[in-house]
Length: 166
Image 1 (cartoon, rainbow, N blue to C red):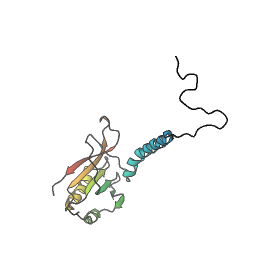
Image 2: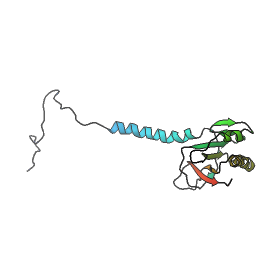
Image 3: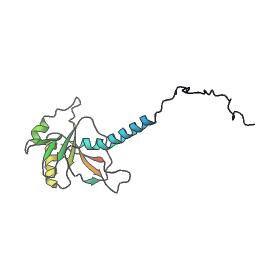
Image 4: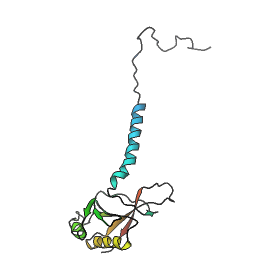
């Protein structure tokens, strides 16, 4: 009736002290736990590593753009300071620093990502964009944060591209 319920079934059992068979399986649960913790740590710290200059970005409902490998980040701080890839730029020096960028093999200058504090004067932001245009940079991405009303996005950096004519 009940086959194999009283021992003597198909499996081998050893009796006695220290007669355990070596385990042939590897327990991957601790490995998966460690990998998930590392994944969460990298997901939390990656956005913090990207923005070196503290800027309070305005909100927008624009869709995120793909990042390009070769890009220049210009940050405008609330105090009016201008930063080129996290390095402060003295007033009047931005045009000279922008002229140092050479076009690539296709004749295109790198993409410019403009991060401006939302408390800045509109004229100050437009002055920097004018310098960019005069230096030949015609494709400028304006960085904002996702609007709180946007479902599914929580405070990530998003971009809206503004193409200006030379």
